Every structure is written in structure tokens, then in C-alpha cells.
Figure 1: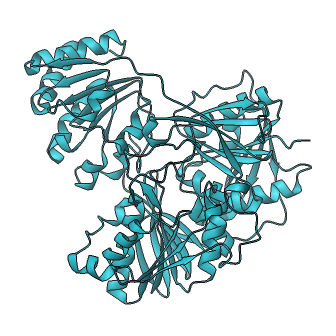
Figure 2 (figure 1 turned 120 degrees about the horizontal axis):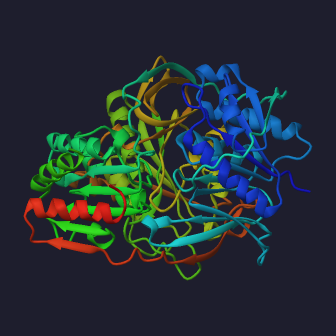
Figure 3 (figure 1 turned 90 degrees about the vertical axis):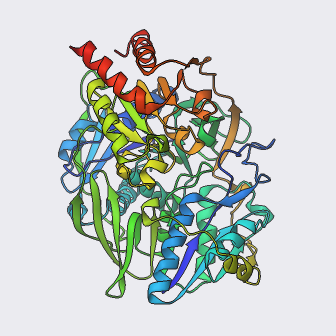
Length: 334
Length: 258
């Protein structure tokens, strides 16, 4: 009766499956087991084979769809058109589509919501299967943490269909004992969405330590004082084997690129350790990092909001603490 | 260029709360969503450079217009607010349908929207609006410029940006990299008082009979709870830098992070 759960895997610029896609597949697999739903992976790309094989390490069955125009079109429109065609051609369209809450995932969810006429639950932090309650049928229960995690909400779909966007770093990707199958598909009747042409792909940042994948993040805010202040933080991050993050204030000031921004309009992270220097802990920043396992904050201001949720709150001048900490770490490492 | 900017009134960040009905409490002070201010700034700059006008389009079940008035004070020409009690509790699918219906009543070359909203919105509505209107969709813009009768957008990517071209009309979603929004001038604030804010109901948009609004929501809130407390944090104060540094290292060791 149900068309099961589809997981859309995302390929990066090099054609590899994104880390988030492995997390999404793992969460959807658990959801399918709990709800008795088949889970199928789908990868749509100019050359989907590599990413599809990677997705099949997490899921029993993966469809690889070759879309030559993906090379010079934004991904979401290309993927959406194929997903809709696959759904139309399937014996049963998917009941639920689970995507990563990446930029492309959000775009795809918006397009699919309209084309498949189904609702979307965004920014999921946890997925579970729930029994029918009131007017809401049995189906996925989606936990979200709106308002910077000050409240946790559980939501469901009012019908037996829906799209779920899972935030990065909420689930640890766990491969299957044996990889699943990959099957090529070429759906017909692909809708043509209005053309947008990729004229050029420009690389401005090295694909160095990504803050979304780092175990340790050393973050700086307005209190860092300027671009030079981030030099000390980079050294600390290097010593701790981590990456450097920043608040919007530091990014807006031009001290560090946007790619390092954590928070509402930046990235969501969940490192083992989050070391925050001169970060006030404003709600817009907190929303992106409050899931860190351990939060250590250094701030001159004893009233900084970050003091309320840091595990260790050091009230001190970071300009003096950063070099002292670097020296102590160097001495430790020897 | 005629530009429509989608603006969402959101609770002042930090003040958000859920009401007894589990919906976002809209009675707290509302402001324009942060990302929407960045795209409004971009719209105003485009119009200042090449002529045209900026229309704000907003949706508010309760007809809240204060945040829209502030956006008018920044320099927009006029505003349209879709207001209807039936919209209370509307899901993103309904919102998409309503904004698309409202846009069908307006003339424009470009629709701009912010990348996401601070009240828990997922940044998915604009993509749906573009799809419903069958318009090119360009997102996560760090730069927007008119080009050869079309639009060129630099879209943020994982390691840089993609340069995208499309014809007009088009829907573009922008980020904070478009540049800091201006503060309304005193003259702007005075002038905004007499600017038009047209209120439209669902019936005005021809949506009166459609399954749109809170009663037809595709999603439902089932419960809320408070997060588990992190445990009381430890505070280190009045220490010299070396002692403060070793307190951090001791803590890292204790947490098995070193």
C-alpha cells in the first residue's frame, strides 16, 4: 500500500557521495525498519555510478540515474525532474522522500513539494516512526530544534506522504554489513524545468578541513578583534587537529570567509569539542553549534550568553589565553 | 527593473516562543527576517543603478504590517500583504501556493527571497514558488547582476561559487554575502507612512476555494518538550593566562578530547 521511502543521495563536484548523504541513508534505513517500509536510494548525476555505489554501502537498493545535463545545470532542477519521472514510472510513488538539508537538498525539497504535491518537514534533528495519533496517521515523527534549540518539537505528516530534510551531523553514518545493489535507470517523460545555465564553476577555497566534519572546532567571534586574531585560532586548530569556525559578526567584518560561518545563516556543526573565543553566544550562532558534545568558551564578558550553555566558561582576555594555550599544547605534543 | 521581494515577518530572534496551540507565537515583536533584509538591500541597489521599483510581498495571518512598514522605510515602493485568518498554521506547501498566486497578480522581472528564515523556516518556499510559476530558479546568491536582458547570479558552492545565467523573469534566493542592509533614513521612515500597503485575502487571490491554510496543513505539530539541560557548566575566573590555559587542557583531558 505504501511506496516506501526514497533517499536522494547527493554527489559533490567530483562525483563523490557527500558525507551528509550517508547520514541521511542511515537515518532513513532505521526509519524504514521501524515502519516496515522499503528504503530505496536514488542518485541523479552526470555520472552517478561512484556516488550510487557509495550510497549502496548504506542501503539495500540504489537507483543510478544518468543525467547528462547535470554538468551545466544547477543540480536541484535536474534531480527533481528525474525523481518526478521515476515516481511516475514506479508501481507506487514514494510515500516519503528523505533528503539532506544542504543547499541543493533544500532547493530540491521546494521543487518536489510542488511537483509531487506533498508537504515538507525541514531541519530534522532526529527521525522515528510513530503510531497514528488523532488525525495524524502512523508515519515518520520528525524532531526539530527551532529557536536555537530552546524547544524541541515533534511533527508528522497529516497524510501518508511527505518530504523530510535532515540536518547535517545529527546521525552517524553506518554502512551495511554487505553493500546493496545498484541498478541503472533511465526514466522517460522527464519534465523540463525552466533553464538555468552554469557558465562557470569557480573554486575559491581549498577543500581543506571542513568545519562540518571536524572533531574539534576553534571558533572566533567579534571578540577576536580582527583578521590577525584568527591567526592564533588557526594555530590552535592545527595543534588540536581541528578546523576554524566563526560567527556571522566575524564574517560580516571580513575577518574570515563565509565558508567558516557557523549558525543560522551558516553551517550547522556537531563536533566533539567546540572551543569558542570571543563568541557571545547569540541565538543565531547557538543554533548552529549547541549540539556540540563539549563546549568551552573563553570570553572577557562574564555576562556573555555563551556562559549559560558552555560546559567550561573561562572568563579571561582571549588575547592572552590563546598564545598561552598554544604554548601549553605545543609543550604537551613535545 | 521591477523587483518583488518576498519578506517574512518573524519573531525577534531570541524572543521566539511557541503559543499554547503549539504554533509560533506571533504576538511577540515581529521583525523582517534577517536574510530578507539582505535581498531587499540588493533589490534597492539594482533599482538605484538601473531604474525600476521594488514591491514587497508578505504573508501574515493576523495582518501584521509593522515589519513591512520598516522595509518600506528602507526604500521599497509599495507592499502587498496577504492576510487571511485561514492562513494561521499554514504549512510551507500552502505558503508556496499563496505567494505564487499573489505573484500572478503582480508585474515583475525578478523575484528575490532570503535563503532561510530565523523562525524555523527551511528555505524551501522560493524554489516551490518558482516551480509553480514556471520561472528559472537561482539560489544561494552572493551576487546578482542584470546581464543581456537576463540575470547573472553567483551561487555559493561547497568550495567557491557557480556562475549562473537565466532569462527574466526569474526567482533568485540571496544570502548575507549580498551586503549589509541599510538603515532606514529619517526621510525614509517619514515617507513610508504614506506608502501603499495593499491587503489581500485568499479570496482576492482566487484561492478562496482551494485547500490552503491551517485547516489543510500537510504537516502537524504533535508535541513539544524542553531540551535536557547540559548540566551546570564550570566557570573559571580571575586566573592568569597560563592557569586559564591549563584549566582548558585539564578539561579537554577530562572529556577525553586530548
